[in-house]
Image (cartoon, rainbow, N blue to C red; front, side):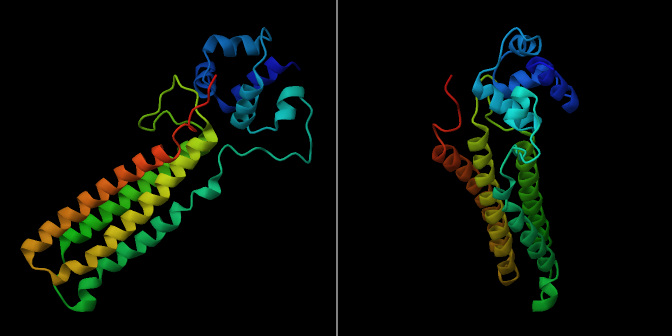
Length: 223
């Protein structure tokens, strides 16, 4: 079986279109068509990207020879996505806060309970969304992603992991600050609630900007 036929076979197994492969590799659909028709050969960089997409060793994709001892190249380093730990702890923080008024024998602050759970929903949404995007190698739904550019997947996944961890921790931290609300009067409590919500939103934006600055120059691949 030729290289082109192997590319087409692996692509069909994943249910990807030629346009999808072109988008991920930063090439055109015509280029993918030529690869599959054996009219041209992908460069080494594209071969590596294809092996990551298909989840097969580079040698197997290039020559068709399987190596039993070869390890499948992971699409993304999922071990970096330990932001889920903060999301889990955050869940128990919110749950405990629901009964906090009973422990200190005060009136429940419904606004704080709702806000803390909203922060948790935001943190788990970011975590799940970023993790799935990195695992699949499909970053098209990430804000600021330009399909016309060629990205370094490894670095892009590091950026998503950084933002995920930062978001999970800050959301948990702001929710923990709601334990103070029963000791505040109504006027200050409302203002305090708004400050925490806006504080979380600003922190999330800052973490994204800092992450982009930190990995600046490493996200894209020069042709």
